[in-house]
Image 1 (cartoon, rainbow, N blue to C red):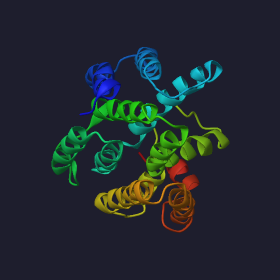
Image 2: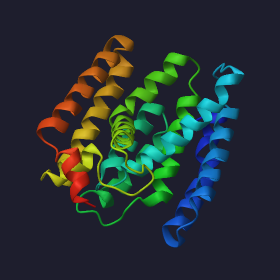
Image 3: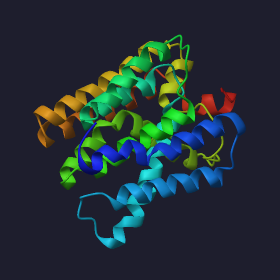
Image 4: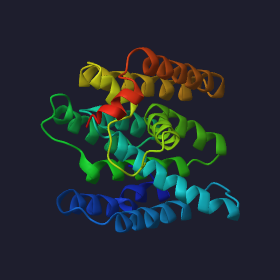
Length: 245
């Protein structure tokens, strides 16, 4: 699982799994869910070896909660987060978690028989954020974070577009790129393979090419996403207008 503080990260994130399990059944207040996310983020930041300046710590804490929620937002298609999450755990060196996700993927692949829910997605997002914070250099942390670019960029850009459109960002929707690709007729498996393949390429680039490989690849994947948004996915405005959900 890891050594030192790394070995404790899945356990530190366990309260999110418990809250997620309860929330999936009883719909807990958003304030309570976010309070647990904040507490988890503080715990993860407290054990980071990165030399973060004191003034930057609140920003990092909020960023960790954003990653937690972004993973949750992206868990809306059979196999998507499980596949990408397994690759991310391999990139982070958490082999047992990666193995567990691959085993789960056999049941979560389209047509899914078992779903991840908040109990899995929020925990997984927190574990990934914790592993990013366990890197010993700023580039190590950034490069691992960039491996999750397909998931995080989709979630982040969707929020920005909703803000621009004057939509309530905390309201449930189906406006992410992965959802609009599925609405345009792409099968679940095809979308999951696209995101998983993009994540795998970034993971390989991080290991074998460093910044000279991963940064151009991130730019290329951003352009690919823009092209898919323009020419393949159900248009954002049309999906929002139709209230697809």
